[in-house]
Amino acid sequence: MARSGVYRARKPANDNDAALMRRIDELFTAWPFLGSRRMTAMLRAEGSPVNRKRVQRLMRLMGIAALGPKPKTTKPAPGHKIYPYLLRGMTIERANHVWAAADITYIPIGRGFLYLVAIIDWASRAVLAWRLSNTMDVSFCLSALEEALARFGKPEIFNTDQGSQFTSAAFTGALAEAGVAISMDGRGRWMDNVFIERLWRSLKYEDVYLKGYADGREASRGIAEWIAFYNERRPHQALAHRAPMAVWREGVACAKAVDMMDNASALPTCPRPQKQTQPHAA
Image (cartoon, rainbow, N blue to C red; front, top):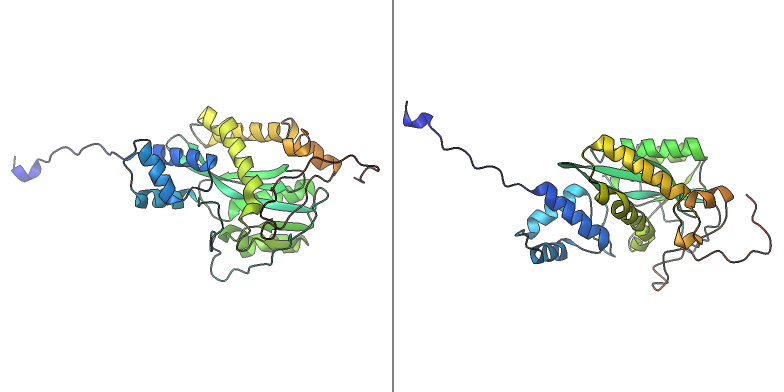
């Protein structure tokens, strides 16, 4: 046998990206203001010999970025129309007044991950529709929107960030066809998404991290059960300990949109409902 025909056995791959991505997600869910520099420092403090370039690559792959006031936190695709922000100083006083597309979040499963999107009613915090996907294209976002419109009517305003999925012609076209006014976050509007980040944090710490789903089917079943619990049974402190879907059905006002640019001290949660002299119309 020729020497050139004999090769040294390859060393097993030392690629722990899946485990590292899960830990990055846990840290980011707990502290969504962490950027790649702080994330790298925290991982190193835990004993992970990782450099910032790898952390940046994985965060891009996961579709996450530090929650904070900075330019171009989300990038629309070239040629996509950007709509004005319509919620400045608005009082959101009833169900189906304003819906929002929750930021796409990362869901770890087995040796990989999936992406999750949800459509939320702003006043009640009810999750109206959601979808899991293994890619970040527009189709699963559009599917969630179409389900929400079919099941729950239509809002007066739909608010999103400027991500390419939500600025796409398919997504904005579906809203325009339904006669819904489109609102998009601009620079400095990062605090509008804080209550959405809280939803994702609750989902992950109360369900995803506890169960450790092996695959997409398990994740889909488990997330469906948790969202049903969240909508129908889980007491929400910002809603005077009522469940979100109960508030949605009642059509009761629970939140006031505040201008986070002009009122930095305001909290992005709705106050407890005050005693009403006359009931609101459903």
